Image (tube, rainbow, N blue to C red):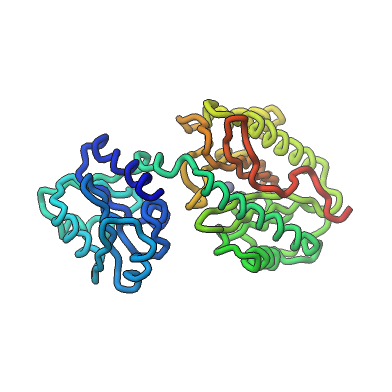
Length: 357
Ligand code: ZN
Ligand code: ZN
């Protein structure tokens, strides 16, 4: 499995006229060679894959990593430069997310004739289409979302503190085997619902409000991502109308998922519906994003997307409307594109629900 993935990456060498590729990010290390630790570098050339790490991880790398050799460094920069010299390379591609400090250090330590080329979108294809095993891990992560939400739902009541609900969800998922929470959970109640990224705060929920909860976890390195908006009693009629608008936008986009359909078209379908209802100005973000080893990864699902749905892509559909000072609604599912359309991995019901009914 890792050998296949490395071969796909090695194919980029010829395409981009490179002699070597360097990978530093945890997600790409895990994907390309199986390493699950926090510090390591993978050097790929046409001749070999070499994994470099520090002494804390040498033993772990020996059992986890698929590579021709594992080498140990004391200082990462020195180790990388020595390995590049051994490989006799000149044009070196690296992840564009690498920090400016690290790039400067490598340039300073390397040969003056070496060329350093940052790669961004060129690398997106490596993790774009998920295997059955990868989808199974995300399905398991999504199942934990549903179980945790069912456990915590009775606590989502007037008087509850947003932060306590976030903590309860995290605890419920970890107790069921989640490795980690996927991000800082959003629990945004009442007027805070107008903040698309309203991380759980000290606010207490009140009757008559909507509560938006955006959460997820990680299983075998892969993430779940899901947003539920629920009502506590009767909510103002306009917010209820906003809810129905967002839900329909979500349902329309979900139904349109099919291999070959432009990702930008999915965004347009949802956006047109929201705009027709008069709320176009209040849906400020893209429709969704890819999910996998990273919580946000390729493909982007927005007006700017240039690619089309491919079988095996996993991404979110998460339209939202945010009315400043009043509240907001976001509804998010994570789906995998199959030959016959979207299979929804996240399972919590998305229809309007009044938890006090
Ligand atoms: Zn989310
Ligand atoms: Zn999301």
